Image (cartoon, rainbow, N blue to C red; front, side, top):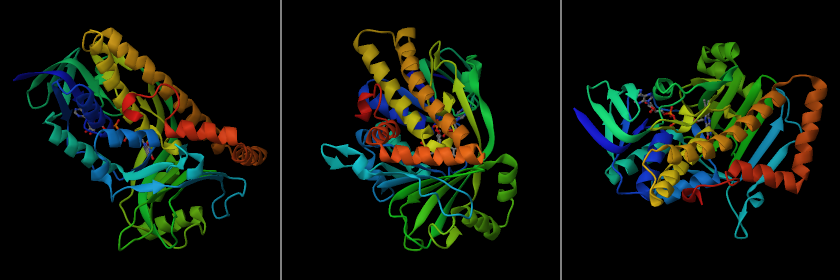
Length: 403
Ligand SMILES: Cc1cc2nc3c(=O)[nH]c(=O)nc-3n(C[C@H](O)[C@H](O)[C@H](O)COP(=O)(O)OP(=O)(O)OC[C@H]3O[C@@H](n4cnc5c(N)ncnc54)[C@H](O)[C@@H]3O)c2cc1C
């Protein structure tokens, strides 16, 4: 059976679902299909949605579905540490007063579980009448998809949001550049004794950064954090093989007495960490969105935020192009999208990679210098405001749905 759509979106992760909803919001007359293989394991990660990403959530009508599941982040603390020692006093601290809008202090971000965000996006896609197909794409050609259920899909163009190992990117012959960090990111949730007070912490340890991302608690565990513990691949493998009490003890040693006694309350998951950037974000009747286009180190917590910006930018490129009579999925429309998003992703990738290299260096004089550097940024209003706007996703050409 063959079905035809204006746009087929492959991938029902956050980037693909947000792209479908953004396109529907700006051009409701377009026929859209979201195709996802299904059966992906539950994503145990949580993400801090940057202020611009939160505006997308609001503009897509998802804020209500996420209320009660989302926590405002009021502070961010970045410090250079050594496992078992107190964090250096030369740290970098941002608070909501660094992020003013209309004279009012705004949260630095909103913490949500990825699974809750994806559920809210999927429910909104259901409610919008967008076609959803559960099947795996096994082959593709410009404007055509072959699915493992025997169906063929044709479309004006295809948005490939099928993740870092994108089949569509490979079938289109789009090359990637990048490298492996030879690290894994271990993710879990911990309950802790002392409150986090809405503060997100990034502790740069010699073996890799440890992020403590505050979550909304519940009656059983009122104080909770999501953990992203980046560690050399072999050490991560060993940590993942430990019984849970020994794993927790290892984690506690790295955290010091930051939040008092801790307990691991969710399964452990891990991802290999790498930088992977597609050389182009489009080809004939194909646009890459989210991790299919770019994977960056999670230390700045920006990968998902980048994917949401892709989604909004793709919808705007389509709407703007159609408004001036461009062909749907033609080279002008998709080329404009590709150039727009590539520069944003490249800038963030360079920044996160630079930070990874700077902080993974164990040489003592360099450690001293970078601590001084963090202290210097902390004391400079100009630099603080620059980093704040970058992290908020409010620099450069911002898509209308993020404003
Ligand atoms: C350890 C770690 C921590 C992170 N923390 C943060 C953070 O704090 N903040 C942040 O902003 N980002 C973070 N990120 C990045 C973020 O999680 C990813 O960028 C984001 O989840 C990618 O979403 P996506 O929709 O592009 O891809 P995915 O979530 O990978 O979705 C791809 C979808 O495509 C489907 N699919 C794949 N192949 C096919 C096919 N052939 N046919 C049909 N369907 C297919 C899959 O089933 C899946 O549903 C982190 C990343 C890691 C590794």
